[in-house]
Each structure stands twice: as structure tokens, then as C-alpha cells.
Length: 182
Image 1: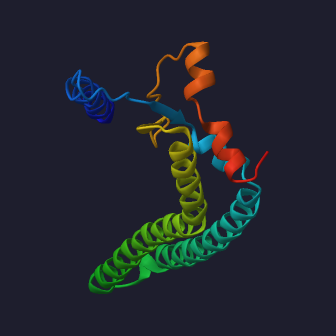
Image 2: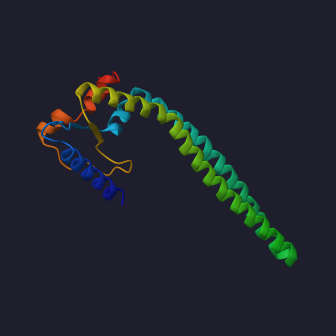
Image 3: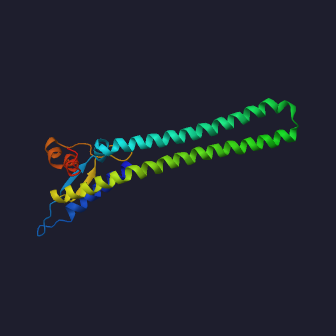
């Protein structure tokens, strides 16, 4: 679905760009493209971000493991005394364990959200730097549009670019130079 929307949007952009130019006011549409993920992975700061994120995830994983062990211990204790307690006590204990299980699942979901937030918190400033550098390079090169080579899911947007087009319109190296990465 995302591919269809991106393809349709890109096609509309081209039609608008070509239809909008008149012979009296001929504008040249200059489009460049960049691979922000390649830049991000090569940024020196990314190693520190990855380490901090890994440490955070390890801490959260340990918290989850502790909660799981506590839950398993309580289930085990219930199973040991199940045969000697009354039906009403069994029912109350099973309800309590069910509630604990639901709380454990909620805790796991909350941890996943916390990890995603931490990732955005740590990677966001780097993406902002890349975005600023892309804008600077695009202005310097007189580009009208700059496309991302892939979607956030890793799907390719630029399906083909000739060698000449790659040399002229792929601004990934220029953006890295703007970020002082070369």
C-alpha cells in the first residue's frame, strides 16, 4: 500500500512538474536522491547511540525476566497446593494469577514502547543533522526535490538510475561531506 502511495505521489509530482512549465517560463526540474540510512550507519555518533540503546534494552530485558520469574514462581506454588485447597480458594487464586499474567503482558508491551521511545530519543538528533545537511546540499546543488532511496521498511523507491544519473543526482556522498564524515 505504501509503495502504491509513494509511486502515485511521485508520478503526480512528475506530471505537475512537466505540466506546470510553460515555454515562456521554463523551469528545470532537478531531482536528487539520498540514502539516509547509509549515512546514519556511518555516522561516528551512531556507535555510541547503539551502545546506549543496547544497554537500555538489556536493563529492560532484565526487568522483564525478573517479573516473568516471579510470575512462574507463583504459578508453581499454586500448582503445588492446588490439590489441597478449596474450590473457592482455587478460583480466587486462578483469578489472581490471571490478573498477574495480564499485568506481565502489559508490562512487556510497555517495555517495547519505552525501547521505541528511547530509540527515537537517541537517533532523532542524528536524523535532524542528516535532514539539515540534505537541505544544505540540495540548495547548493539547486535541486528542486530530494528523494529517499528506500522507505522506512527498506523497500526500494529508486528502481533504476543510470551511471550518469547516479554521479549527478545521488547526493549521499555530498551529504556525508556536509556532515564532515569523509
